[in-house]
Length: 495
Ligand code: ADP
Ligand code: GLC
Image (cartoon, rainbow, N blue to C red; front, side, top):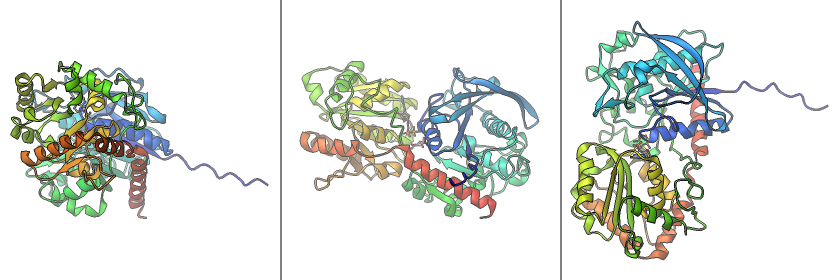
């Protein structure tokens, strides 16, 4: 007799909540992660929904539901659009024009929107209400960064006794501790939160409240995006005021490195590159280099094609080490290299680069703006990629660079230290150049080491190929998240 088939266990489901996700909305790496992780979880057999706002310009999705969502006595008329994403995952686009139909995602003219606490509280509440309206809720809620920090809080308060989602465990992922989501304490009632949360063990932070702190203190498990950063954030140097809060929860805090979307970032079939290339055949890389030089209006000659091209793609903020660049701005154009930068951010750093480009039009190209195709092209065409971060929770561009044979020069912090191995002539496992001291001199020294090795094309090739052969696909990290989901489920079940 054939063995009786066991009834299939009900599929486990995760509700992911965050403020941006590729391909819908992106300002930084969080969007890349929320674009790729859902598919990787779906491949492991999970039902995955990722909820984010339907910002201005997002046209995707089919209208599936309309619910009034009341937060702090004010009702928002919320429409829910579903859009399938890769491998069977789906996006839930939360539509509420009065909150999300704005010029940018988080603020205008460098100032956050004053109603951000409400905007992101409504996102979380809408996602939870949507999930709760059927007979069965998600197995777990996975909240990302401060914008979703109230999800674990609401699950432990407002929804604690809810017949459908009461008791749902949560995992909270910190992508960047520098963004703490603070506001005046008098927001509490406007967010439907009781005043007894205004304590140092809960949301209170220097007389205000912090959504980030709420997430950390109420989730079953806290993760962050590299192993090294998981340790660093428990120290005063990198903890940004949260090191004590995190040390208290260190038993439940783990680092899970980000992967990269190896479909989107693949030099052998990247539609933004003029010619394909791979570890087996690097020939096509030169076409990208030529195209980068041309797009930046830099001379395209035998000399500039031979000269190493150094690229940088970055939000132009302190975190990314732009003050180090400022410190060595006079030295850069004297190096035997060409520089191209792409980014937006603080005016002083934008000016730094535009002034450098104006003064050295043959050596430096600056593009201020957000340009996805150009980002791919720079990864393809540059020889060296610069990431001198002050701190870096994970960092994705150094991994894209490795995959594109573009040798990274990085500061040895957070995910950069976990993913780039400093060059040593004795090792075949080196993948880039790492410096440690946060000074312009240390950065310059690392850059000089890289430029010197570029002169030895045989060794350089070995370094490129070692990087290109690294495996940073999402599958391993997704399995680690599933382990954490299971651990959180056990914690709530008292197991
Ligand atoms: P962070 O999230 O701190 O900005 P990451 O390295 O994790 O840093 O991710 C940044 C992501 O944003 C990468 O995918 C990078 O290519 C992209 N990016 C940053 N600035 C720009 C820009 N100006 N144009 C296009 N892409 C950009
Ligand atoms: C944050 C961090 C970056 C990380 C990204 C995705 O924006 O600054 O280091 O890679 O989140 O986790």
